[in-house]
Image 1 (cartoon, rainbow, N blue to C red):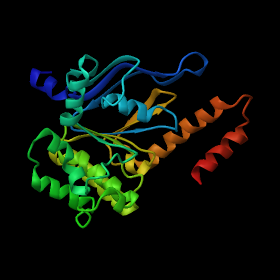
Image 2 (cartoon, helix red, strand yellow; image 1 turned 90 degrees about the horizontal axis):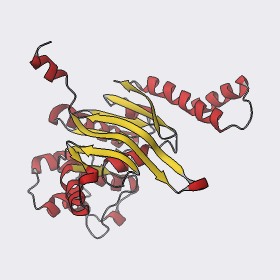
Image 3 (tube, one colour; image 1 turned 135 degrees about the vertical axis):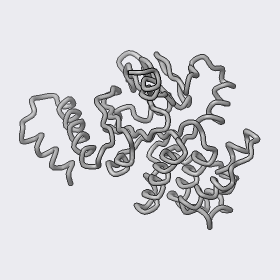
Length: 276
């Protein structure tokens, strides 16, 4: 293989973790939310993270996005080791290089929708790409609500503002925690399609936590977590494949949590409940 082919096949990391561990509490109350995770999120790709409740999905995302510190290990945005940065440098990195969509919307209550959307760029004193911002706003259906404050918006509309804020400044990487969870199916599909197009057309990198198999099917890659560890992954997943794998993880959690022998009939009944 020649040098050009080798370079073409190399994965460029937008973000990565090495030996990542996050522990809450100590002694008998110790919880290892993430447990020795090595993972790379490829630049210009759409990756989703799935797993049962309590699997460590959001904790991993918060540590990757410099919103929380690891107990052990290292995290990187590009070639920047987050553990080497001061608090001020971390603040600048979050502002200039990372977009984040929270489960809780985290909007500024005294600002209207458009002011919340452009806030990161205003703080950085940079001029927004107005055509891009207008495209974002149109896609998520906010054109007629731009001058309303969060208290005047529904939960779904507030989430649309949060998604728009993350996309508007074209950051190096976007971390999205259930970004469509409070949207109706049509608006949710519009947001997912917009994220997909941002990856395809603009080289944007998106990492998204979701419980929705259909949402995961928009991704290039889905990573599955359970008990704070990576259990597997899929490339170009379909909704059906994701659902099948999630059933396996859910059954594993069910069996692990049982204090006595589990009968086959009980496992089959549990799987049946997951389908309903």
